[in-house]
Length: 581
Image 1 (cartoon, rainbow, N blue to C red):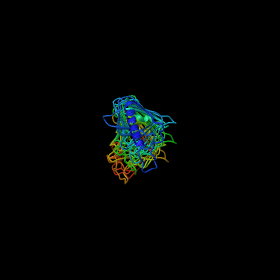
Image 2: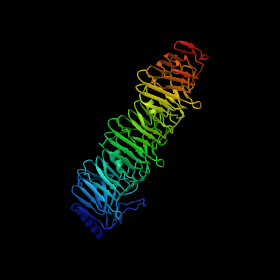
Image 3: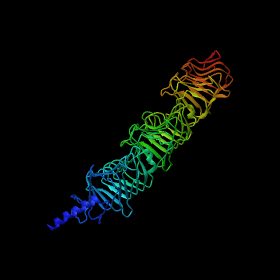
Image 4: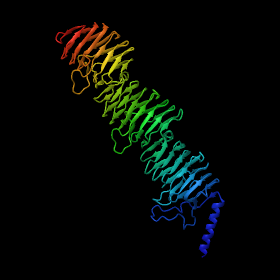
């Protein structure tokens, strides 16, 4: 009886302490901890000489005044924190199932342990998860967690539209996430943390907060989920640091606008959700710099377990994207979707030493008003369509050291007004637009060994409206070939090459083969261009009309071969058979 009476007195004194004091202490923080190996885990301290302070939360009994927890505490239900809660080093906070700390109304938590005396937040028993430490938008902006060990929660720390500092903490064994920053939440700091063994993403953060996740954090698991649809903090600079796990874009798109600059470090992997894409400069100026190294390439890939071409859409650069945007030493795979793995619209970017493979659609798709500031050392293969689709001008930036598969480069522009050279890529250039006009000072030089293919009803026109020039000088060993793009080639598959009155002096076709044209009546047409064009050492064959048709022109012609042209040839109104030419 005496023992029972003493116990009742002790309980009354504990209650008075809870109600009347702001500093809670206990002598031996280890003595009451539940035995993790004991399947019958009992309520901590129920028979101990130094039991924990039990904090049972509800709306009626929130923490409304500054308070210090120092020692052992057992949390039941939801404890609302409306003032500053300071937790001393070495304290141990045990949560009953579904219990949580809910910080609001300018409340804050200052849980700053030390390396020798960390603060522990843990579940009362295994399998009975507690909820989280929840920092609501109305809470103060200065909550801090340092040298804390957090385990057994659904989500260790959940921040809703607020700010928190988390440093040198160990967060593990969460049934959902380790840390979740919602919406525009942010880190005051995030260094030296270890997050592991979470069933879902160990870390979920807004894209802008990737800045804070430096490489001194050790994070393992499914990946770091980057949330939010827009990176648009004015003049904001975001660096995505290398981690041992991927960053994951889970929503349908991520837009970079409003003067934001995103830099991706070597070794980073970005895993993209289904049909998702990254957009740069759609509404306003923006820049993406993804520069890896040969030893540490940057990888953009699918987040699917079983990866396949077209899982995600791609990376899109729009007209407000900075021309200093760059993809270097990047691996881009399993994309394609609606546009292409790399889509460029009305701007120019640099693509160097990238591998773009196993994608649906094109490898790189640049609209007719786009260009490349550089395009060298890339490997683009095993994609559904051509490795590169671009304008005639942009094709001039494609260096010979690129390795493209057999479909080659598709030309989508109608006009060339710049001076460019198409080098021998050992794969064809294919004219897909209905015509390519070289005028307004434009000049196209084609190197020996190049093959130019034409889709149905297409042609090249030189000097029709204004000055233009075509120089195609092959060699006997490496002729330049103009031919049909069809697998099974027939006369008349494409139209012709045309020189008009504004063709510049010095136009030349030398050691060229012009094959399977004539759908427009001839394969080579010269009109009113005086003596500006030279045709020599060429083979003109398999035309569905004339091989060559000259009208009011006086080209320099020598050592050409004509055969299998349906209508022979016509020189200023006089018709000649192939043999007569």
